[in-house]
Length: 317
Image 1 (cartoon, rainbow, N blue to C red):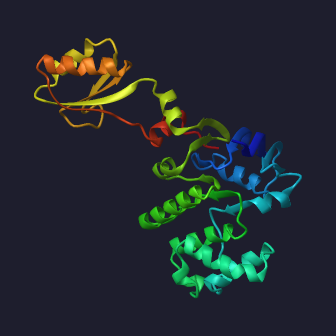
Image 2 (image 1 turned 180 degrees about the vertical axis):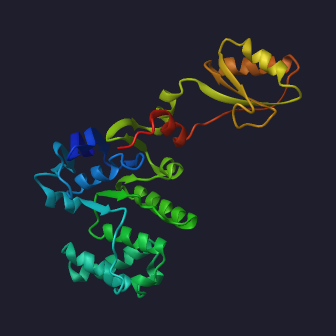
Image 3 (image 1 turned 90 degrees about the horizontal axis):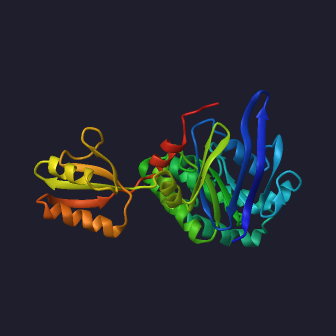
């Protein structure tokens, strides 16, 4: 699949501060990329360059084949940008707000009426069509801003913290909306501090720290690279010592942990296993055959927070 965003050796300096250093990143058409990192990592700087609001010190970036430096107008026609902080014209009605931005994109008046209804339906605000923007909740304003970015039907959505400041219900609604846009074939490049929600909807993640890209790829592949062994949790009835002794005799078990070393139940053992499924089956059969009363054996799936903590060092600029 062709790349719709191409970033090569992108660098941005503010005086003596290097906010972004030699960033190289490709995003395939239709992908949903979660862009994560601590405050000051360079995420917003990257997004402002991609949206032609900021010129890089060096390097190049292309969106849908258009240079963000030489062809800014062409880039703006194919992107929808939602900044982390945005203003709304509160004395406008909801439909007027969308009509105003659609007119800015030269969409004919005859086409705007149906388009506004479609956008309001998509973001579930059609019942607020004639309300003033100032009367909307924060979550509704966030969805209205996203509808605004969709007015010209862009190929690429660049969203800077789209769920920032929202309550749990509003975050769920925003996540479902992004999932719907993903199903519509939009390419979505968004930043977030809510790591579990990034992992829930993205096809890949990019981790930025102190202006450097330190990890990029498919979530599952990254977890496998960071933890080459599989992690299992074994729960038993009775004393742990026989099970621990049995595990320590198994060549494919590389380490074992119990409470309080890790946050697991007192009747559980967590262990790294480097063998195959057949060898795992033999391990379990041997446990039961030796009298260990096993009540649960399950593989633990690491999450995005595990990946983030393993690859970052807590650096700030």
